[in-house]
Image (spheres, rainbow, N blue to C red):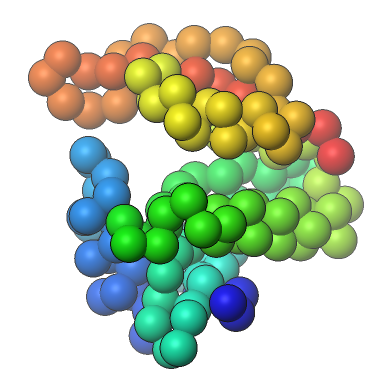
Length: 144
């Protein structure tokens, strides 16, 4: 498994992964815009196939994990751990002191995943996620 910097050539594959794994996926235009405004992105690859990605926005002394997704056939294989660890390492190198993220309140698997890294539960963001009905988000943070 290799981890590398995300670039514009990855957008189609990343968009397809997001569509398969996220109930409210970003559009390809949103993904492109995210990179254009300076957000950081990492992709994981296996045999030249993109298996997952993470996008984060460092604004020292803080960083915000914007999205992370692992393609369905590669989930539970450690790729999410690799990507999040790499994002944490890069954040430390940029003198980040705290990382924030939101996660769907109903996504217990993801909440447990973030807990395993030491993220703590900070607050609830009412009706944060789109849908009918809208879903609350759990705000979590990690001091590094």
